[in-house]
Length: 293
Length: 293
Image 1: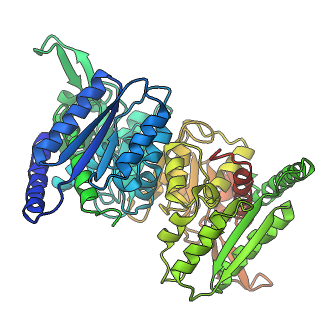
Image 2: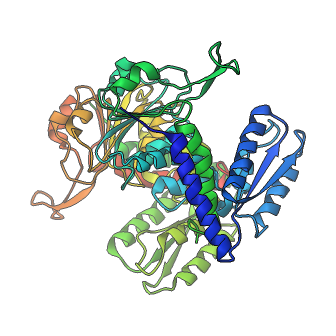
Image 3: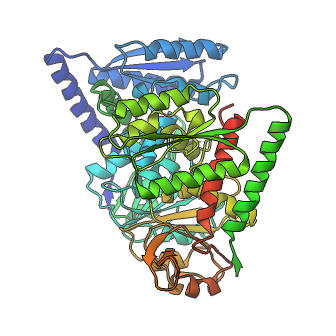
């Protein structure tokens, strides 16, 4: 069994990105610049945005944090987005979700210039990814794809079973794993709450992606000997074992599943660390005009 | 075995659309108006566009046919699209594909205003469909969905196997059949040229969608007793049996597969007639501002 060490791979990728930034600097180029917009003071959102800003610093990106009040009018947020859209120094922009209920997330996402949509949530990027055109791929699926690539995991002709049909993980993973090329060319089955005989279906998976958000859902019985298991779940639970009093649990019962696997991601330290790195990679692409020319 | 009679359902839907048009007329509203752009003189394209224009006439839509020379510069085509985009009388627009090789299909499709993209090929419409937001769904998948609806075929929890991963049929069908609601909530498996054990996978399908474009590919051995079979293939072959000397063949060996099915589409007369009707339905939606408000 080989551990898919997202923490380690993420560090490597960060070093590669930092090297690219140094080159850009040496050649007198413009530093990649990410703008993050946060509305309100939600604790989790604050933490995520802080991590993203810190990651930018680590690799030498410029970053701008825009804070707006919880009560901000939708129109003001949209104007702010326009301002960032029109700022030639800023390459990429994220608006931290969720937004307060009085603001339409759809409207906000569609307002972001597709060329700066490094979260890959704009329908143009989603649609382009879906039909196989150049696009920003959102952080979690892009992180998983990079993990598969870095470990040279074979995918062509494999049966990939995905549990969960969310817009940010399950659906894009299904699209990416079934498309032509590498990683891809999998036969893909997408499962969800309405799926019958889920255990049977999972047992047929060469590659199993668990992204339903239910701690310890996947047990050893559901996994084929030699399978690759990607655990996207992160559930925070109380724990007497840790100093913080909290523990992060994946969707997979790691201890019993791992011995059957050829490869498996741990939680934490698997998919998680790959997501922020994917945002950095997208911002670098935006700065180099790689996707939209 | 019940025949999914696309020809009949398409006629019914046309009557319903024509009735809506009459109502609009009576209440003094603007007639729905479709513009079709054709570049060059490809025989098949001419036929398709002629069918679409005729279908518009049948239901009382206004239609405008724009013909451009095979050699037309891309820029002229794009200007023509802008002109139609800005014409308030025109609700929907299609540009008949394929285009000559000197013109970028991607550029052309992205130039069409999403609100008028009744073919549903613009990445915004593809992306919105994918994430479950209101969107124009392209004609073939939308036609299949309507056929399933009209026959009240149960889909929730069913295993839908799709053969083919094209952007215009296989991929959108996978997205639509797996999404929440009706028709949908299927466990979906998408198969293609790299799939191993295809026969086994097909035999597990409650709903089998054949969209690979290979005449008679699906035989009785590949179909479970009681399955619903949707045949999207249309291959034109020489035939001594018909007056025209040509015969249309589906991807399914109808004669041997039909007796095992609960429902099956014939070829011709199944999915085919539903596609043009779906274009009309999208144009009506565009005229009523149903998708984009």
